[in-house]
Image (cartoon, rainbow, N blue to C red):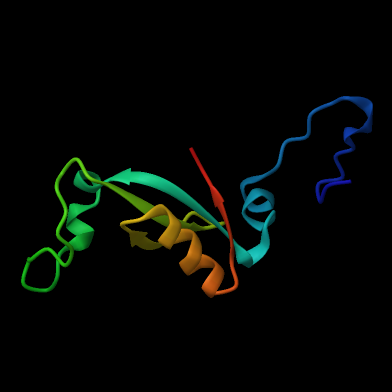
Amino acid sequence: MFKNDADLTNGDQARLSARDFAELGGRKLVYIRTVAARDVLDDLLDDEGELTLQVEDDDILYSVHSSSGERLALVGDRELAFAAARQYEMNPVSVH
């Protein structure tokens, strides 16, 4: 039984609201996905406009997101992204 009282035992598909989906994993679930460095370069600049991380436009970074979609971190290595999430007692899952 889901929060919206959808019963999947009869073969019907239930639709989760955006709120239900965000709460599905609770606050401890985080999503990790790849992102091209060129798409987040503005987020890697310090107050003087200098890159805080040496990256090329075509480098792949790993973005860690809360269940509500808020980006929590950008990491240069997939294993490090998962390890960092676990260090903060979060449950990371990969999103493609």
